[in-house]
Image (cartoon, rainbow, N blue to C red; front, side):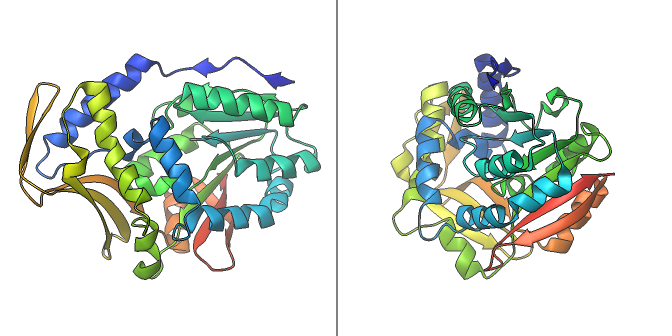
Length: 321
């Protein structure tokens, strides 16, 4: 059937407005922060692809192992007619599901949602070419804002992979899952990937690799702000920090100022003391009973939970009540 023209709900000016708001809010907070979505310009996306291939970075390999083993079960249990992927990127792991659904014979439509027009245009064209019987309908949007734009009708399976749900703070996760449930019908399905709580000696190196790729990825957010907002950050004046919070059971990525500095961005003069930190990412780790409880609180019932052989990463299949 081929790829349909992209359905665009997010324009460049929307992204610019959102970036300005996040920068103003985060850099004027008592403890400075920026959301991780601004890592991902073309360079940031390339760096993240490098990260997923590093020996320390287990989540991508572990999640792929689960999907390779369980994709057939997911297709058989859900019988989905429409597969929707949030934050799709290249949809590489999703191909394991598409292959399984192709063998199962029920899937008619694939709907990837992503903020990047260029990435989505490329991935939808490639998937349409590789799965000629599939209708491919790309949506340019933000999964925190545009869940109401998901196509209705047919039995749907929404997939949210990569542990991305862990980048949301607990209250944000609750709000996201509640809105996700309100956009689905009873009997629709949600497949969500979650990194699991484990020894910090395994977790921390995944966010602080020996080659320094994650450090470069972390500093890339400053380059994005410099380019898009005319700021004058010196990325080399910040070092990368990854630390485990045992109480919250999440890891934080931060940028630590190596010297006192004053940065001009928008109409702000932002000062950093030596050693002051700017939080750029939270990545929560989950326990099986915790993710099941969060899903139940939003109106889902966990149907299946699977892990890779090492028990590093979990994938939950939940049904909308």
